[in-house]
Length: 115
Length: 115
Image 1 (spheres, chains in turn red, orange):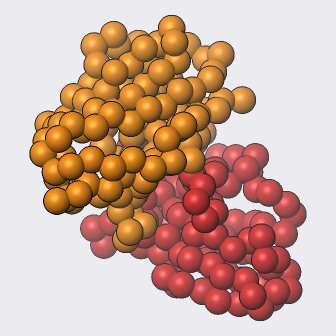
Image 2 (image 1 turned 45 degrees about the horizontal axis):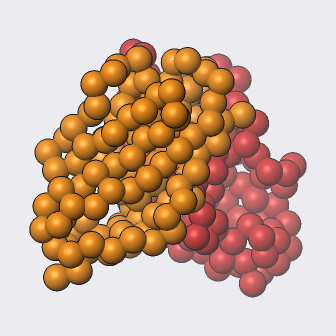
């Protein structure tokens, strides 16, 4: 595809359930980011993948959050035992790492609502 | 850690007029980038303009320009000849050069352009 895609667009779940969010980066982009945007807030960094390097997980808020990426393709963000405070828009971005500045291209996000 | 502050939660401007959005940041880094992103209701993050910290010249992209004051750690966005399509949330963001290149965002300014 031409841009970063994310699925589902919206997800409603019950407290305590696990959810998986998917991100398809732009083909050939080696770097992939996940961000969280709570209502009325800016984006918060969650995790970063770059090629075969160990991911930067410094932004994950708790051990209920995890993410995987296979090679340079799809990534999934998993939230276990969801809580109401996990309600947010989860945005994914990818970039082609080739120089001193590498623009991040964002997907449309997944709006997660935890009831 | 870096922080980005946007002190104007909401602003409005008349069509064809000029508006300036404020942003300040805090960092001990010397090499970094600053950005303004636009987020319309579609949730898609769109890069508006980028400034490299080592450049003294202010960046310009058509109707959008910045006033970058490195010593004051200030980075404002000026939108000239405002258009109805400029209505959106605007986020100021910081990126340290090197490392994971994660973006640190402010809380945003909601801009409304009135006809």
